Length: 257
Image (cartoon, rainbow, N blue to C red; front, side, top):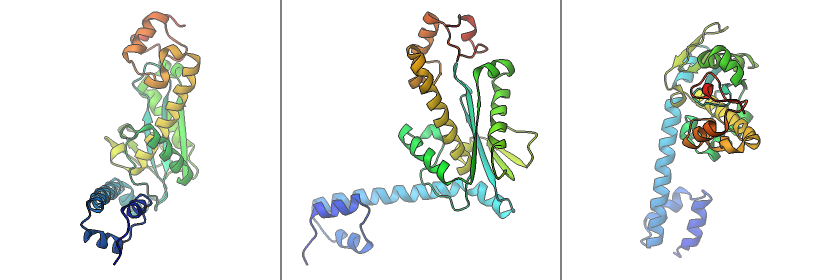
């Protein structure tokens, strides 16, 4: 039997078109190029299995709640509590019961390009989502913890249909119209919270890139408002922008630009 060329097998691999029969044939093929390709295939399969297992593990909270009769389960997370500048942003998202996005995880664990791609998938396939943005003036007025809760409540209140259960990352929320559970490191334990973390992260990053255009010296597009060495030096030399949090040290000790 004539063997397929390595170039053809590589093309089938790249296009994810290798059948079980073809893989079986390749395992009997002693050509070095074929065996190298098989190793790549096996690594990819192992990775996919690991992602499947991770996704199933991160779906356990939602599965238990659905088995208890809840339907619209919202995940809630925030980003931006620590920066010296910019808003705190929270997102709430209700995913359909058959939602599947292998690789979904805490937004901090994903590359920017992956976050951007997942952001669109989550928005397009969610039952509903909401995004709450609380700017630095309110943060300075009520403190960052209270501002975080305001952003979360704002995001939850945008959901339509409304949530009948809320899973939130770390921050206990009161005065909700439905039951809730606070989960420590929830963005790596719940697909709903992980999805919310991505919506919040991408939204805030885009905002910081926008204000970077007005204040490029502070490099907001890269540091996202966090206190990097460059940011601190610029803050000391040029003062604070209108987007800086005056209640955060050392911002309060410099003049507004």
